Amino acid sequence: MVRRAAAQHLGAYAEKLENEFLVKDVMTMFAELCDDDQDSVRLLAVGSCSSLSKLLGKEGCISKILPTVQKFSVDKSWRVRYMVAQQVYELCEVIGEEVTIKELVPLYVKLLKDNEAEVRVAAAGKAAEFCSFVGGPLSLKEILPALTELSNDTSQHVRAAIATVVMVISPIFGNADTVEASVLPIILALLRDEYPDVRLNIISNLQEVSSIIGIQLLQKNLLPAIVALAEDRHWRVRLAIINYFPLLAKQLGIFSFNDILGKLCIQWLEDGVSTIRYAAAHNLKRLAEDFGSDWVQEFVFPKMLDKIQHPHYLFRMTILEAVAAMATVVSSEILTTVLLPEMLKCNKDKVPNVRFHVCQLMKGLIPHVDPTIVESTIKPWLTDLQEDDDHDVRFYARDALTAALY
Image 1 (cartoon, one colour):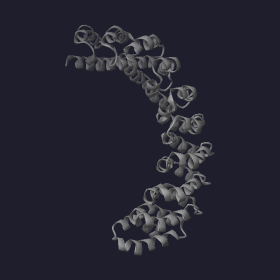
Image 2 (tube, one colour; image 1 turned 90 degrees about the vertical axis):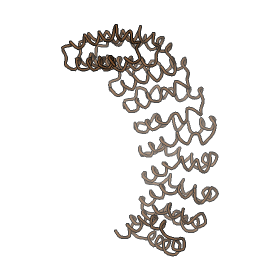
Image 3 (tube, helix red, strand yellow; image 1 turned 45 degrees about the vertical axis):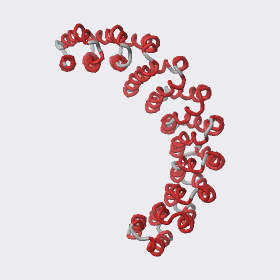
Image 4 (tube, one colour; image 1 turned 135 degrees about the horizontal axis):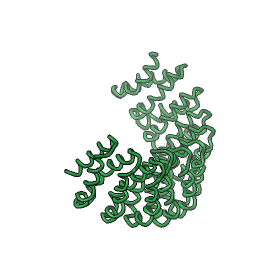
C-alpha cells in the first residue's frame, strides 16, 4: 500500500522539487518502483512517466523514461501495458517527431495488436493523436493497417473504439482518393456491425468524413448504409441518424435529399419510440430553416398534414409538435392559412391529452402570430377551452390565454 501511494504521487512530488533533486532522488525512486514485483505498483509508476518526462526535457526523457516505457510495453501484466497505451502519446510531444517515428510508432503498433482487448481499446483511443502527430503518409503506412485489422476484432469494445477514432483521423489523410481507398471500407464495415454502439459511434462522427469524400462518393457509398440504419432496430442509432440529417441535407441539396431521404423524415413521425418522434418533429424545423417555406409547403405538408387525424392519439400529438415547430420558421401567410387552422381543429379531439397539448403549443405560437388574429381567433378559441370537461385542458388553456394577454 505504501509503495502504491509513493508510485501514485511520484509525478506530483517531483514537480515540487528543484532540478538537482529530480535526477538524484526522484529518478532513483522511479527506477525502484518500476522494478517492483507488484503490478499495481508498476502501473502507477508508469502513470508518472508523463509528468516526469516533461520535467526532464527531451534528452532526459529519451535516456531515462523511454527505455522504461519500452520495457513496460511488453510487461507480463496487461494492466501495466494498458497504462503504457494510455501514456505513450504524452511522450511524443517531449521527445519530438524523429524519435517518435523511430521508437514509439513501432511500440504503439505493437500495443494495437496486444493480445488483451483492454490494451487494444486504450491504444485505439490514442490513434487520432498519434496519426496527427506523425502525419498522414506514415499513418497510412504503419498505423492504418493495424486499425483496419481492429475493425474486425472479436471484441465489440475494440470495434467501438475504432469506430470513434476512424472518423476523426480521416481528415489527416488529406484527399478523397486516399479516404475512399483506405478509410471508407473500414467505415462501411463498421456501419454494418452487429453491435449497436459501434454503429452509433460511426454515425455520431459522419460529418468528419462526409465533408472530405464529396457528394458523388457520399451518394454511392454512404447513403445506402445511412438509409438502412434509418430503420435500425436500436432507437439510439435511429436518433443519431436523425441528428445527422440537417448536415446531410446541406451536402445533398434539396432535390437529392427529397428523392432519397425525404420520406424518412415523415416516416419517423410514426416511430414507436417517443424520443424518435419528438426528434423527427424538430428535425423538420431544422430542415425547413435550410430549405425554406416553399419546401415545407410543397414537400412536407402534403405528406404530413393528413396524419393529423391519425387513429393513435400519440401520433396526433407528434404531428402537432411538428406543426408548431415549423410554424416559427415558415412565412406568416403559411402560418395563418395552413398551420394555425390545423391546430385550431384539435379543440374537439376526443383525447384530453391532445387538447391540452395543443394549448401548450399554442402558448409558444402566439408571439409569432399577427396580433389581430390572436384577438379575433386564438383568444376566443382558448376561452372556449376553459370550459372543457378535463381539468388539465382548462389549466393549459388558461395558461395560454394569460400569455396572449401580455
